[in-house]
Image 1 (cartoon, rainbow, N blue to C red):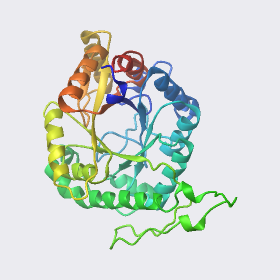
Image 2: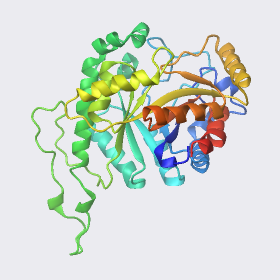
Image 3: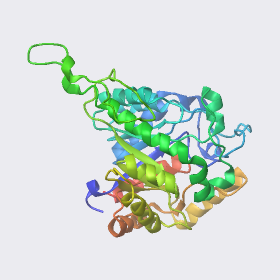
Length: 371
């Protein structure tokens, strides 16, 4: 790949990695370090220096677990806490040269005005470098933590059955669509042109306006926003293979992260998403990205051996909501090139199994091959 603008590579930053046994394979990791700015800015600077195009930050209201519908892991072997992604994004935008930061923000339990103000503040720090990933929460524990309204119960087996996801979460995704539209309307209420003027005035009141009435929206925020907006953030949606997430992405997202698996290859997912997109009223033009977990090695055998040791430490094979690529950075770069050319893939978000190892290989080995 020679044209770097034609294909974008991002790293999903989360703790010490995405594999359940990442902590036990993170050399020299210090628990306290994960809650300091140095950990995050270090990775932001490394990613920027290596040519990575963006990093993503996760949101979480309760202590994190990958076991849906069960209590969080209490063995002491897992990273369970997260810093607020808005705080981390502030650090990355202000102190690193990473081209773009994708900030996940919960839309089920945070009101549109709060989200709009937070993202607008980030956009003021890094104009054109902020992307918002709205996140739907279907975990009852999140509602318990913040005192919000209970959400529909999603059982572990539902995650793998698209029709069950659609039936249980339809209202949540429809609310999320209205939430994103409300945030975008709020961003329009205080344009940066309202600040200053030829007459030396500090601001121009006539440029600041309330949200226009648009029927009966789910979130009737009147505005105006309290933060000027010069460059509204783009919107990205992580969409698992189901109708409602696809519909949300088609309706409001500038880019969508699709989750290919062996049973659902990327070609089929893109075709399915484009079908949903074509049937979605008021759709926006959406770029397609792949969302893939990675275990990388010096050779194919080395990568497989690493995954085997991680799974053994976790006590079970790694099961994720997306596919797991296991192999060399060179082979991954080749497969991404094929999907870019054959499927029109705009980019990829990579979830490193162990950040120090796999994230490091993405920066050192994969990113240079995708330029």
